[in-house]
Amino acid sequence: MNLVIILVLSAVATALPADEPYGYHRKVGIKLAESLRQAELAADFDGARITGGAPAPLGAHPYIGGLLIALRSGWTSVCGSSLISHTRAITAAHCWFDGRETALGITIVLGSTRLFTGGVRVNSTNVEIHEQYNPINLLNDIAIIYLSWIPFTPVIQAIALPTGSLMHDSFAGRGAWASGFGRLGDASGIYAHQYLSHVFLNVITNDECSSHYPPNVFPSTICTSGVGNIGPCQSDSGGPLSTFVNGRPVLIGVTSFGSAMGCQAGRPAAYTRVTSYIPWIQPRM
Image 1 (cartoon, one colour):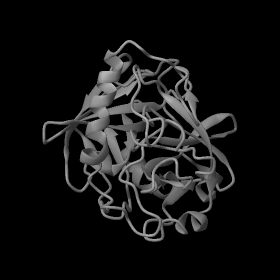
Image 2 (cartoon, helix red, strand yellow; image 1 turned 90 degrees about the vertical axis):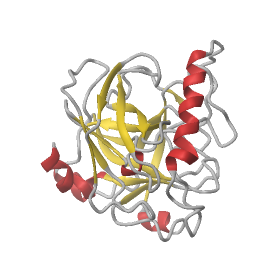
Image 3 (cartoon, helix red, strand yellow; image 1 turned 30 degrees about the horizontal axis):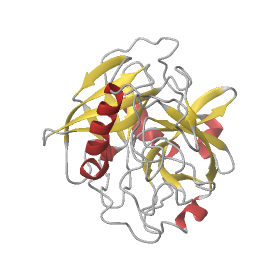
Image 4 (spheres, helix red, strand yellow; image 1 turned 120 degrees about the horizontal axis):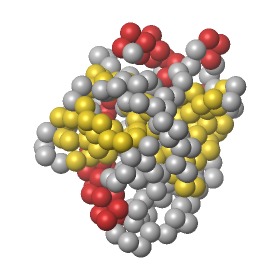
């Protein structure tokens, strides 16, 4: 993607999975964690260095939570999440277990435009991944994070989940926001003081998305267009895809995967469709 945004994870190829669609932490998260940490220690930040997206002002997406993930291997990885209540957040299952590495715990970073500095930081070792999650094809790529009580502020708020008629909405044709702390593009590095960014995308039909990733698009998948070379890129798997309904943001997707050709290839990005998992989420609220 031409922009900086959320992550994408283990990329999926045009027709078949690229490499192996698991192993996110070694392939992406660990390297990005260290790049982000070093960038935030540097002093040459230029906030204009964003293509395809734009810096997100503090509070623009008060529900986004950056994730610093402590792995059993001893490394730190990064992902994204969405706060859905005072004590719960939603992320991708592959952020906790990517098929190869398992996490020991996470730190969720709220109310900050930077991942390693600022904001409110809450630790958790209690993450529940979907019991039918498949790290090979990324079916049921969703997990819930159990947190201690988090007070809401003007820059820390829960995002609404779909209800009512939205439960039957494909959202195709709607505009939606993706946001995250990650790379600006396939060839770009992590800049000093990497800033939370966001991009506005068009939701497409699953039929269109499936033409790019036949084995990996399910009814429980939702996709956005990559036309214009914009969309999620490496950094924040698990982060939010949201749309506005009656003036308030609603969580409709959890960032899952993108094209093996890269984020600037103009291919769709895929997310776990939140409406498909409301019956799974609600008993865990």
